[in-house]
Length: 412
Image (cartoon, rainbow, N blue to C red):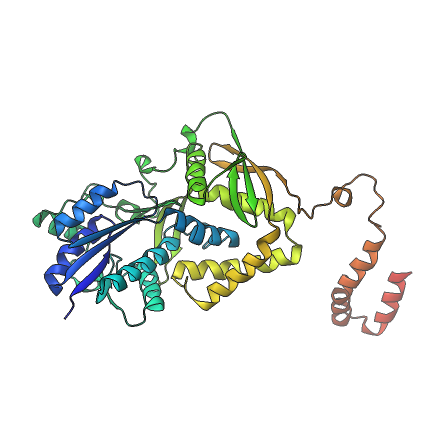
């Protein structure tokens, strides 16, 4: 018999219905937990709404700085991108929400935790893997896998019948998720991958064609792989991300429209706006280009796909993700300096980078006269690297007996 359930509560349709349904189904006390991750909502109203629906207690906690510094920035240090486009804005928020949910469950002596993720999506996996990693004996209740509702339309009907106020409507049924890093749009009118998203759907950014006609220049300062200042002004991680969201968003930067492969096996169309994150991804790449050794950079890049999959799938608290993070964080110690960017109508261009730890040597790179690099050395370098290619061709050709003579003639 369950006595207390801690519900990850957003104030939206699914979790609002979940409060009533959990009480009705389990006869247990429902404690709502809402994390402030920068979703730009009236969380006082969210608290009041949860209490009105039937929650016995509501936790509303400001986790913006922790989210930016301990989740978003570590991910950006790896340059993680899922399937070449998605900057993982929803994925990276879930382990923090689940972590705090478990902490509240332990504090309240709750028997179970619950969430509003559907049985078709990735979030159920992300929430539950984190919960089990932190508290192996916790009971997880996923209403979407148990209740009789089969669609959001049926949820809306239930909400109307129980006088539960919800923002979703039958005219605008797509689902959104917003935090400090991004906003996502899924479902409803977006389920047709051929249909262009409605023009009124922009939230964190303006359409590129409506952005200013004059470009904006911005300088981002990095220290040990983390952005620390904008145009010379030091900022906390959350404040820095908020500022870049405004700069990028007002210049139409950061929207992608993708069909992604969910972990559970199906394809799903998603629209994402990640203004500040897009700028930081581009800027971090730029400062790394002059501060990281070639082989170190390539080694890290070989792990990006794997790391991104781990975040997307929900394995934030997993030994393999933590191992990659440790390696990447160690090599970021010299990723310090400044990047200058040009923002214009949906584009983010790198136009300058500098660093006291730069490995870029102007005299080595120049096409003009210099006395450091002996160009004749390149001949031996090329021949040694071509050796296997030449041997392969000779051994497969008709002149195998004359292979030695061929090499002899080439070296004269």
